[in-house]
Length: 449
Image (cartoon, rainbow, N blue to C red):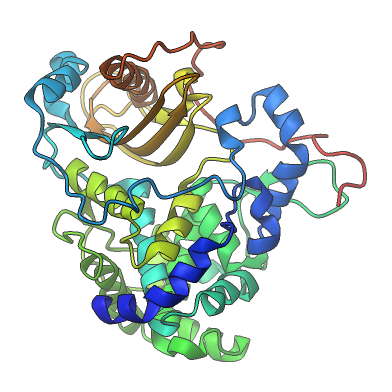
């Protein structure tokens, strides 16, 4: 199937990529219909001044590109002993509690790769949402092979209401804005909130909304069921998603998730997302294939994305745009040393109490998973740096946000030193707890439209 789709797609894709990329960093709102992008674009000067978004978030439509598309035969090189020792040295005595892989592609013809416990498995948490995105783009390609415009229409024009059958519970807030408002409001999605499929994808990745993750998974099931006829009428869609047996929906979901991995060269035994992200979603789409991840397979996912090999170049570029941080930076990505860099990022966490000592959010004493993936693109005055990181940790009794921020800084400096780059001193102190809470008040000009 993958080879068949690639052959059909080749001619159309070359034409699409030859024209200016219609990306959706902040100026891509018209292409996608994401109101968040329009609001942030109108308010970006104020948001940068306030420190809400960083200067590295300001790449425009034609500036987000695939870094390895000219290297179709690129493979992960063997781990470099010296580079791996440098990375292990950053972890200190906690090294056994980490799984980390770092790929330096500053010079793609001469890459360097480091591993520390890179095949150790851990539940991906919200990082598993990148698997949902891949499955969705795989299903779109199967429904509309070679037809980028049809896929774009599905993402942009399909309006999806929030339904309690999929969205509860969730405490992740997402941005709401309508033209004329000066404030971007943040709150959890509630039943009846209606946005397009692209916005649900954005909420799933940029805000890590569990409600959005389960909603996208439900639409993935519907897309696999209806094929090119998706989206059907509202009554047909609801009749299927709300009326079909949970086991039937769960079986379709499991097959779709695994297909997205297998069709794209990802080892599903080392990276997969098995179930929805909300309790109601799990009940409606019953059954699970389990969830797992390793640092090595996550770097492989991002490497294939950079090559244009996640489905096809168009889909790979869209996934990369979804990962581009144009909102508040949190956790690993909140490190001040990365403020001027473009960061393509996803994180996820799971913690549990029951062990010895203090315990709290991001500070578990019996489980303290924190997972981060990042593609970092830093443009210095004379030298560029390009590298990929996958970082899984389970360090008990320590604030995992602080440990990931510290590692982001140290890894950035290790990469810079390898290339003789002197980094500027950060202009701010690290934020100890990154947050996406709260409205952005009075950030847009009066009557913005």
